[in-house]
Length: 154
Ligand SMILES: [Zn+2]
Ligand SMILES: [Zn+2]
Image (cartoon, rainbow, N blue to C red; front, top):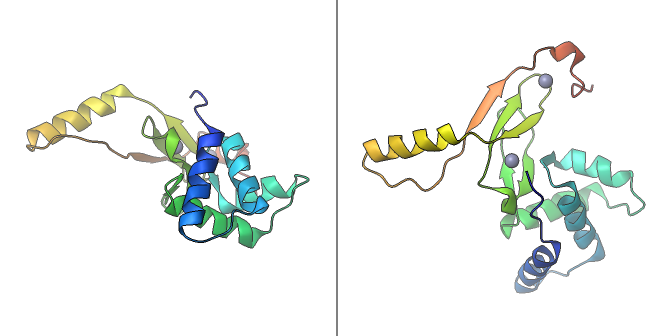
């Protein structure tokens, strides 16, 4: 999927929201947003924490969690609750062009695009007398070799 992240507009959207809510735009909050834009993929709060902890600019776990909440509230992030998994986040700007497949063994999340699903959505809505707007599909599956799955870290 092409990288469509416009960091500057995300930053100003976030700053506007924080100002509106009378919160401060701190360096830490900005660093968290920059890191998310750089990742440009799905992540859980803990994954983000571990990635950021390896960086020079360390941010506390509490700040990461609270910043993720703020970014979700202002609409920059979407929070996915994949069955059995801790919440995953992604930039709203990456939607709605893909669906998700989740490995129930290792928790890996794969994005895919299949236009046949759009056709099914449209025809189901039409048959029931509705005008389709969007859809959200999650496929739960198991990878071929869960024991040796490179994503299956302890
Ligand atoms: Zn797997
Ligand atoms: Zn996604």
